[in-house]
Amino acid sequence: FGIIVIAILLVVVTTSWFIVDETEQAVLITLGKPDPNTIGPGLHFKVPWPIETVKIVSRETFSLTLGYEERNGEIVEHVHDAKMVTGDENIILADLEVSWRITDPIAYLYNTADPKRILYNATSASLRGVIGSSSVDDALTDGRAEIINEVRANLTELVEKYDLGITIVNVNLQDVDLPNEDVRLAFTKVTDAREERNTKINEANR
Image 1 (tube, rainbow, N blue to C red):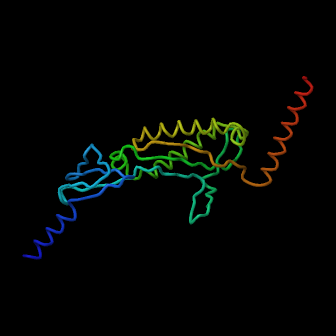
Image 2 (image 1 turned 60 degrees about the vertical axis):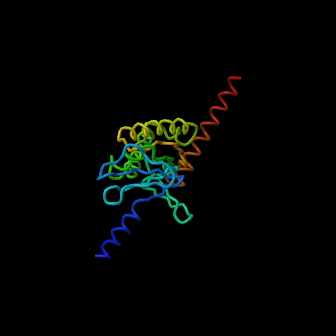
Image 3 (image 1 turned 135 degrees about the vertical axis):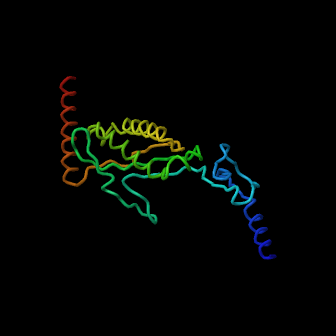
């Protein structure tokens, strides 16, 4: 009997207090129902398990990458994910980085089974949709800023639609390139010829 009492007291003591770090926020769950008010940093008391439990999520900004990942300090390319078709039916490789943070912990924890996977799929769909309506010239040259803005707008709309509980902080088109050296050289020659033609036209007009 004494051992049982000690065990109960141990559970009460070890599950009644919890600490939330400065970079975290917590959700208090009472009999399976989350409290709508999140808990900030500090030492907090709660009713012992299993009546009340706590789930802690980070306030930090996360990074999601499409087309590559950093593994053990090295960049690993995912060509299959990076390969996409432009609006003028050219194939390019596009790498994207998305910065995001959790702004609604309850939605993040309970609305979907895997919010990170949904965010990844939404990012891929947003980028492919924008690239698919852009020309290869825009993707490789001075149209990148507009592409980034469109991707961010589309992705933000999808995140709100799915109610993932996250906010998109930033979107950055890391690298856009042609799939192989022969295609790359051919495109460079076409671009150079076009620039030379425009230069000669401008000179003739002057």
